[in-house]
Image 1 (tube, rainbow, N blue to C red):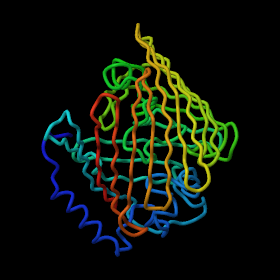
Image 2: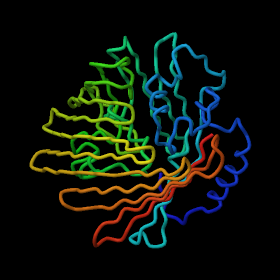
Image 3: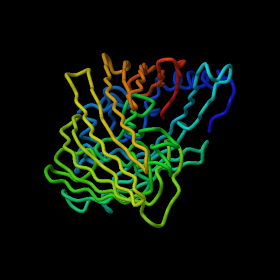
Image 4: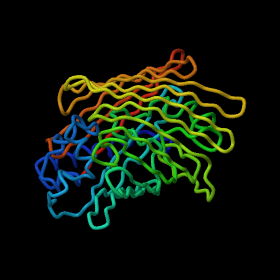
Length: 360
């Protein structure tokens, strides 16, 4: 939900006051920090970017080990957030979104061998729900509203926006929605089967060579919107990739029954302790239209509470420069996250997005 109005600085001030009030309260931490009694920076190099321990925690079904008992707490967390967009073309109007305000719960239920994911955004009345059942260490099935890319989770990037190769052409052309090929940058109602060719687990984010096939039963929705459910599948999305810790390399493609096609390659590479690179290329076609896209970006995290990122997007020869600054204000158990990101295009005024988010 976006409204053409000036940014409500009173709401921003409330977020800051809430963060300061929570800094000295050990209980004001997200779900996993409460359950494991670990600080947020135990799993994150910089929220939301994981470190090696966080990647293993994610890959193990949000458990330190299969035998460790978590602290008994309410398995849920919430966030309070506001996002403002500044652009010369908008004049004095500053669209505001509250979509990052949500309640959520992620958990692995041992008795049912089910990893579930639940999110609800009250301001936009959106949900994001799926379940994953690993049958053994080699095979798992995922059902629900899922991101079409299983190689990695784009929401773990520091960037606010998605790299262009994940949504070539943008909404209404060749990217998200009914008129373009499925790209793995957003979400759809789908069934996914994953096979681990090597490694110890078929859960997402685990190490090894993997192949996955996803059958979507909806048109892909732009980020923040709920897709329209269809009772007949529109095609199939196939992936093959290798993940080793924070590094991953893979290819994927979508073939639609109406002739939509999408092909992509993805690379992630961690260098040393502070640098993380990510890039991808894609080609999409539909009817008489074709588009190619490429992105390369790097994130530098000199400290757990600071991140500086830069990405270059290329859409059919048109370049966008996307710098990003992310700061965490507070303690290592609870903090206010402030992110500023601009999209700079030659001959066009920059668009800047600023977000403030408190997770608790």
